[in-house]
Length: 168
Image (cartoon, rainbow, N blue to C red; front, side, top):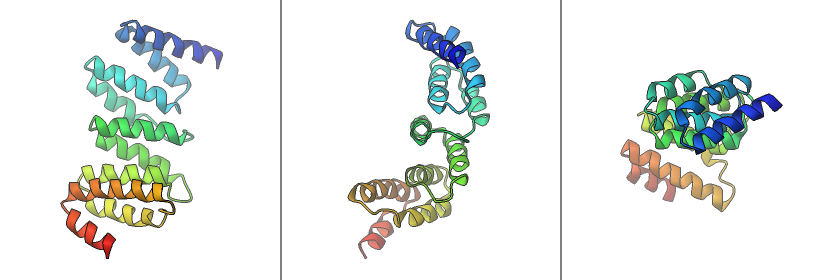
């Protein structure tokens, strides 16, 4: 554990001192020791993109696993992937996480619905949204659900019917 912490510290130091290319091998070594650290996976994705190594991002994500990860790191990575338009890898990692849970997790479920709408998987996205609607037991959750619902239905061209159904 101490060795892996030193490797990560070195990678972050190198990146902060404009030696991102050198930091890559240290990030990669760290993730071999700590594969569930999706926060570090995101950092490595950022470095790959900064260095113009987009194929490496896809390869890294193809080998990533959502087994035993912290939900906050999963959500952070999935949001990053959405922003960078890596919808396929985002869908894969979110599904891996959700498939391991007994109850549909609210925030990862919302992220997956958004990703699926970006991929043109309208049925899956809207079905997921309908299932998540039952979990909107607070104003904050309802607001989150409504915001994602709007994005999903905008992507699918069904905003009017979404609002009609929600108001009716």
